[in-house]
Length: 483
Image (cartoon, rainbow, N blue to C red):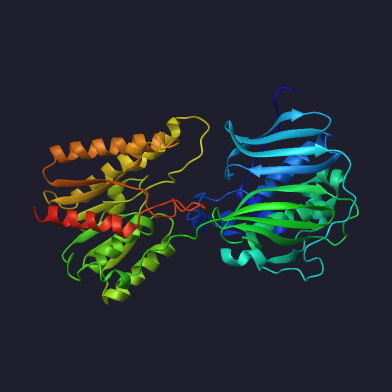
């Protein structure tokens, strides 16, 4: 049959909060924009089970779900808040229905529904006689090595009235007990196992007649693949059973402590330097701040949304140095640099680590809007920042660091706009260095480095930020001294 759109939806923050209360899944990747930016998706994502239940309800509203007996669901891409979604029917016959969740032609999830008689053989329900697990809105964070022996029972958090109001057509098709049990799959992954550092990959769902009246699901880990950080979990309860697959994300990357760098940097190696580090609350910027501080420099470190991270960095530097050598301030590279930096004083060095999320989803090989977003940060924002710092003291020499990327030579697929923007930034640096005698620029193509943005579930080889930045800081010092 010809593909057609069945329904459309845009999930907002109020939808997120409602489903969190119904399911009990308050994982910060869904609920906290500051913490979510340090996870693999880089921003808040919608509960995948909420999207699945919405899709089932849309199918049920058309009367196409009465013989539903089995589902296989795969989440292919992250589903972000505030993005228009469409539910498209790819195939539909008497035995099955294949659906896709899309955003702008990009497939985010595949849903395969099968029709026929429901299973009637009662299944062995994992942890059926145990007490429900209580989370108090804080997810578990077990070690990967501990997950193989975990099990438990998850009771429904929402009321029948709430589920009925949200999924009225689905209630008539499969019943409220099953809906609330399906919602618990979100809690299983986001709160219990893997918990805090989880990514929901997919699940199977078998409807079973006569399987329990107790509301909720029991679960038990089936297999842990440490190579890919993939966990398989069996579940059953309230008229259904199946298997869940979830990845274990890497934890957010913490910058090294200042004390740990004392054997890498001389205590006065960078004394006398007054450095401005744009985007220094985490990642390469935080490592640079710690290295400069270890060598005796005075710093101003900026952040956009991670104030608590910037405060922690400042506290480590100032307490270790025993004096106030690190200041922090909010700075948005999308806004006017002069007004933001007015009154901050003079700087000898500038390190520019402002960035947006690098690995972004798109449906085409090239997105003009994405290129514009990258260029606004890596080209326009950098130039604006340079001129704002120079205006504080006309005629004074400024040494600035521009982090480019080895992606310009490696050319990984899906990063066209990022590569183009960084190439434009390099061209800008070349011309600024040639025509501005008071500006010295260091451009370095940084290899894949351990940061929040590169911390994928399956480990990928990456460099240590300290190893990457220490030679560049020393190069900056040589240039500042006329060598």
